[in-house]
Length: 272
Image 1 (cartoon, helix red, strand yellow):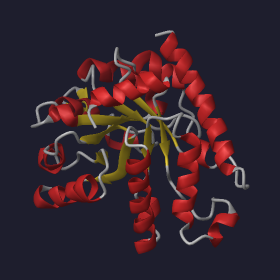
Image 2 (image 1 turned 180 degrees about the vertical axis):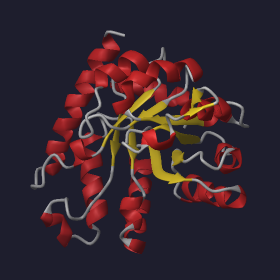
Image 3 (image 1 turned 90 degrees about the vertical axis):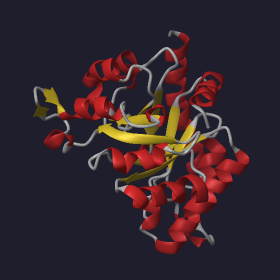
């Protein structure tokens, strides 16, 4: 999927919502545990109920790997269902991979070719030879961690290095890598005050923004400082949507929560 196609979906749906499919069997409705594949059954109902309200889905692969082969199979079924039924929706493998050379290439092939995701998240700590193998795939996107929403982000990301915060060095350096036009970036919503500085370095790139909702990020603040002429934002909500209810109406409850966020986004877009 191209960024132009993603932008077109944002304008069509009046939404830049990304829904995180982080499935914990301890949190899903009990009646689903009796099905052959509880993880996929949960995802399918969430997708069917919310696909008209969002432009992206983001399964965090740890929530599937934790259940072994069955979990990986559920992830495979989920992405195939999305690609078959809703090919216009942007898909993100939240895997946070970060290795070098042939290993990165194999990770990229796993997510881009075998599973056919549109994008994958990566960690930049090992530098360009850990990220460039992902960037080599045409019409695929690599979403690099830039400034995250967790408390530990201050351990390294905001430390001064040669008079400048480390995350700024990371952003600036990444722009020099081969096929860097295929880069997107993760910036946590709880760091809204940093968006203006980030946009000075990457004025047009798409940002994946977790932390709105359960983690306390403010949608209006993120949009005020982070939105571009082409929107340039994917606002992720996971727990706040998919676990809105643990009863049989869970999908309806999830859609209601998604609609609340989408409605706020529509207002922002109309006033843009």
